[in-house]
Length: 180
Ligand code: CO
Image (cartoon, rainbow, N blue to C red; front, side, top):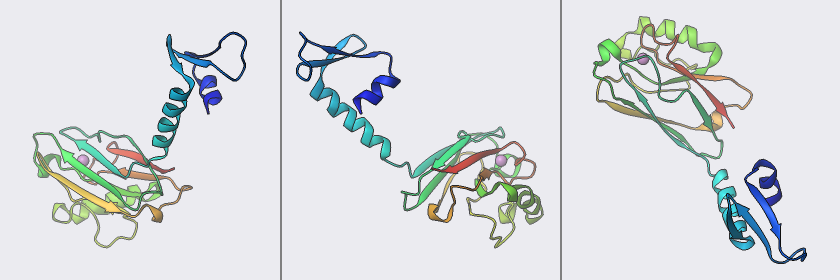
């Protein structure tokens, strides 16, 4: 693991004292000498934290047509994924309402179309449509909502999009979701 790090980090050099090969090896990180044992410990901690999956996502929306997060990487290690959506803008949900809807990329256009017909009372989504993988309700200024779903229903080979189904928003208000 230290060798791999060295290859990726030009600021890291290995220093061997007085010709001894496997003893007294020091590691210099940005000019600071770190004992090998400490370095290995840090490397192990950093390496293991990498494997920890993120299972909860906080996404903010406002008075514009954007999600604060443009891309989500979902791990199958999570028992469930929770998305919390918060509206930090000033406009109400009838004017600038937003939701978070997940579907396959190929289903977005038709779901958004049918959502307009469904109206605000139905959160601009067709009822009982199997193509909706997960969806929050529509929220406005100051509101917060969340949705949880089982990531094992997703495939790493499929392209997923999350979008807002408020009329007209889905064309620009969207992001990509991948299973890693
Ligand atoms: Co929206």
